[in-house]
Length: 113
Image 1 (cartoon, helix red, strand yellow):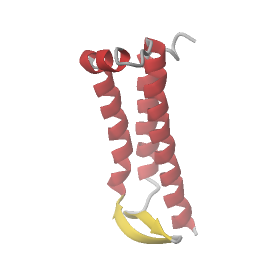
Image 2 (cartoon, rainbow, N blue to C red):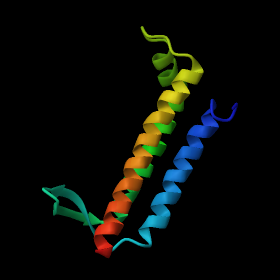
Image 3 (cartoon, one colour):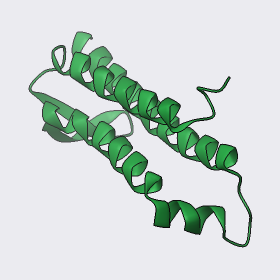
Image 4 (cartoon, helix red, strand yellow):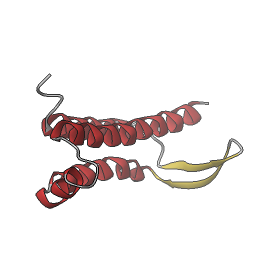
């Protein structure tokens, strides 16, 4: 349980997100849909854009690990303990990772059909 309440768990989430993107890029076509309207793709991008979410994860993890940012977030009007702070950041990173995974699976599914 100690691992889950530390920043190591946060970095593990980032690594998993990067690995998901790295594995997904080999199975994606060179052009992927990035926006759908009424179930029809209306905007496209290159498959390298799948790395935007892992970059966002690393950026969030890095910036929230900075002492000034952490001090501001843990000593604001609503007091957060270190464990609550870590869980808040982990929740945001997991949301980004699941969004990344869902989008890559959507692109793979649409490519197969």
